[in-house]
Amino acid sequence: MDINEIAQYVELGSARSVTIDRSLAKNYPGYVREIIIMRGFLVRIEFNVYDHDCGGLSFYFKYSDYETLVLSLEHYLDKKIENWTNISKTGFYPSIEDEYNIEISGKVLINDFLNDNVILPREYLEKYLPVGYWEELYHNRTQ
Image 1 (cartoon, rainbow, N blue to C red):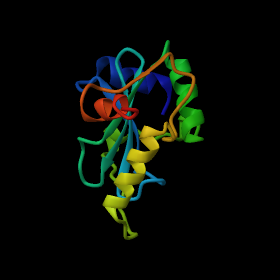
Image 2: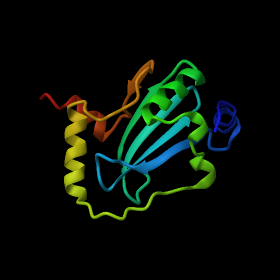
Image 3: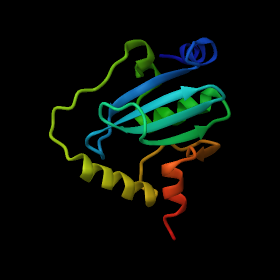
Image 4: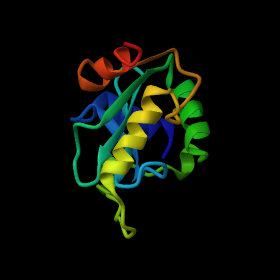
């Protein structure tokens, strides 16, 4: 991939976004992490239960421009943009071969989330959670 391909999908594509990563979440067996670049230099990172495409933990990251966004994601993924895959084009979905216990993984994800231990990108202007379950859980964690 390159910045021009990302910009074309985000600015001109019908979905107004491009998925650049869909992989098994290493720290949360049974979860899939997706990274989606959206209009307005926005990145959404989702942790969804395997074989479900919504309802999981989502974070939004705002950047000033594509260059900063790409640099941040290159560091996060430890992979240069040239080695990214356009998942929006390929439709790739990972296969799980190992056994997992989704209840245990879910508890680990919630614990990491509440203690700010979920590994996330840096160098963003702003990070926020969508309104809903996860945001309420996070804001009520000290009560």
